Image (cartoon, rainbow, N blue to C red):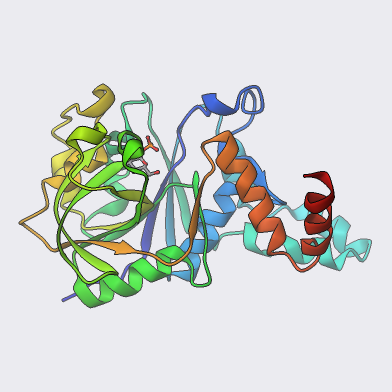
Length: 289
Ligand code: G1P
């Protein structure tokens, strides 16, 4: 029986060193693309895929992330009083259902696999999604919804994948591919950040996953992998052969907002999708470039 997907884990403990000084006193996941913080895009995408319960794996200095999803009573009352309806409406996506968001702390940065292991009590015996808020996907159908739909067909584990230039395999988790229908691919192996010469393909994992709870027992082994970190990819690799494991070539475009250029590209792409901004941005780009 395929269990309903209700839970999502969002690892947000990273220090954001690539965005200093902007991230000196604020979480990198609070950086906005146009006018919405990265974390809110991730939570809204999860909600659209039917997720009801959220676990943020946080660390020191990340309290703004939790504040962001609370009711801001004074702010809302003031906006209502002043008739600022549009501003008031914009806050709707930034509130989670009472009791639906919890946090756990990753006390030491031991890697993504370790961050997910920190959420083990939240995960329990249920399938769960992972969204890495740095990866922002512009798509007609939200990326996690595409994954969830594939999960309800195949069951088991599914990761969102995309082709990368062969010289970039050392930045991502890379698939060894079996059967491939052009959209869904069978995963025969997974390697974290292989050098191009060792990469089994150029199909890379992006930050959207649907996983079975059994991955936790492998992460609990605390084995160190690439970069001497406890890698989620290595834990997932252990499930292959035990459970179905697929990659889904999602439809949409991914922006790596953990990178300055990727973040800037996302600003432009998302602004061009906004009816209230598109024309002004297009005109500016034409004239300026
Ligand atoms: C993590 C994962 C990697 C994945 C990537 C997607 O790497 O370890 O397998 O391909 O996210 O963004 P990180 O970006 O944390 O180095």
